[in-house]
Each structure stands twice: as structure tokens, then as C-alpha cells.
Image (tube, rainbow, N blue to C red; front, side, top):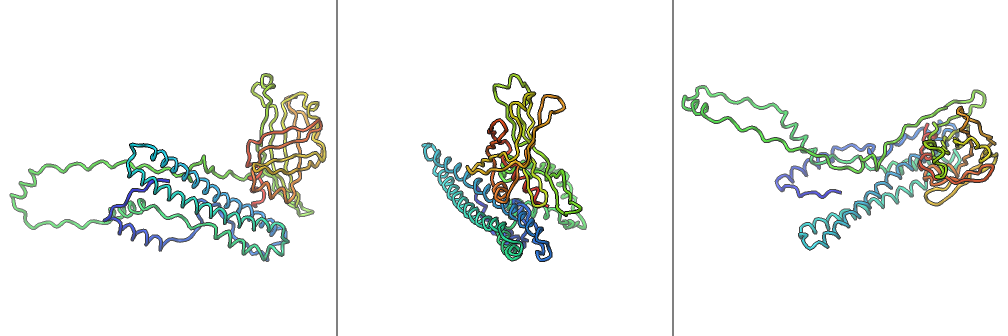
Length: 395
């Protein structure tokens, strides 16, 4: 939050008039801070399977919109806390002026109001998201009736685009005024000689004063550290079976975590002991979480054994909740080209409840059951599975 200086009194009516004109001519559109919302198709013309897929994508987009409100509420709370700390420090400073205290107090009140509005908007978005996510349990026939109303509710969450700053408006108005053609100067029929001599003797005009540099204000919404750009959606497979008509899709594998026991570091040097890559895939109505473990250990089969069929992967999320996934088939592992690494792949089935949870929550830890016992690993890319599910269900 930035403290605003008072506007010059003579300029105030002009500024208010410009703002009123721009507000009247503004066109409502997609807010740049929010993800794009797919247009609602004609649901009556879609097969049942496509209606269910569209409802899942719609739920993911609604969750992304709710995430924007969550980040805005976080920023509003942070700004209010920082200003409150500045006000307390100023009150404790005996040399602080009364004007500084009044300015900071006003800024704190504005920040409190902004935080309250942001939290109310977040609460409204969470209610809409909860109602949209409940629709995943409905039949395609019921979805055709409930989706239009839910779509309007989600659309109503997105505010109109922000208005242009007043400084930018005035700058553009001034620039347009500079480009207007100037009236030609009148030429007198006859100039007296005395005036001509005086003009010749006049000193040359002073050079114009250099323009002051203009610095752009810090915008938290444009900070890529706070709001990283959306990663591209990459699919390694997207086919449809010629006989059954079922669709098979799989996203590109990405690293989920890596782990090396500190006692093994002197022996492995620059290599990691375990590197796990994840990729979500779809085969018809079956969704699978594929976990590929690359283990730099010539004795990996003796130490880990295998990934048995029906063995489990226990996923723990940052909110404390856990879900259990089951491996589809046994994998005994294979030796890598360097004859040292061993590669194991687990295929863990995702049911509707697991997909719903993983789309909106961030991973914290994972427990993998090997043939010789289980091991716990800390997740590094906590949003990886949520992003991959969003990519898989997008198209």
C-alpha cells in the first residue's frame, strides 16, 4: 500500500471529470489478475462423458479463481500488518511529528478496510467453489441443469478490469494536447526598425529545464516471486483407441522430490540417491499417478526389493489430511545404462475423492511402501500434482 499525497485544489475538478468520463465509458471484461474462464458450451449437444469432463475443468478453473482471492487476502493482511508495525514504531518515537502519526493512522484504517473486503471476497469465492465441487457427484443429466447457474455465480466473482491511474490519464491528455496543430503566428505588415533592433539585441531564450525521471511504483501483483507465471501444459500422449473409443492422455514427467541420506553423501558425491518423477495419466475413465524412482545404488534391488502390486502410497497434504493410493501392478525394477542406477515405476490409481483433494491441496510428504519396508520423503514441488491434473483435465 502506498500513501497518496493530496491533489492540488485547482486540478481536482478536472481530475474528477476525467475519472467520471472514463468510468462511464469503461467496458466490462476479463480481469487481468484472474485466469480465463472457458465459455459455457451448449450442454445439450455434448455427450455425457464430455459434460462430465467439462464440469471437472470448470471446477479446476473455479479453484484457480478462488486462489487469486486467497493471494489478494494474504497481501492485504500483510500490508495491514506492516503499516500497523510502522504506526506503533512511530508512536514510540518521541521525535515523530503529529502529521506523520496522522498519515500512518489513516493508512492503517484504509488497510484494515481493504483487508476486510478481501477476506469477504475470499469467503464468497470459497462458498461458490464448494458448491461447484459438489457437482462432481451429480449425473450428466443433473449437470446440464446445474452448470449454467454455477457458471453465472463464478462469473459474478470476477470483478471488472481496474481503472487506469489518474497520473497516466493526465499524462495521456497532456500528450494529446501537445500533438494538436498550433495556429500560425500573425505576421505584421510592416515592422518598425526600432523593434527589429530590439529583437536582435534580446538575449537568446533559456534552455528548457530537464525532465525529472519517472519511477514505476512497486506492484506486488506483478512480482513473479509472489505470483509466478503459469507453466505450460505439456502432454506426452494424447490418443484415442480405434476400437473402444477411449482416450489416453499423459502429461510430461517432472521431478517431485529427491533425497539423499547425509551418511551416503561422501560416497555418492555429486549424485542423488533417490530422484522421483511424477506424471498423471488418463486411460478412459481410469486416472493414474505414475511415480518413477531412479535410485543410484548398485544394490537397490536388495535394499528396496520391488514395488509390489497393491502396495500403497500415503500422501500427506499441507493441511494435515492424508489419502491412500494403491499400486496397480508389481514392478521389480530395471538396471540403468550405467549398470549402477535402478529404475522402479509405480502406477497408483486415483479415484474421484483423491482427484478432488489433489486438485485443490498442496502435497507435503509421501510414504512409499517397498517390498522391504516403507520410507517417507518430503515433497519439493508441492503444487506439481495439482498442476498436472489441471493440465490433464483442461482439454
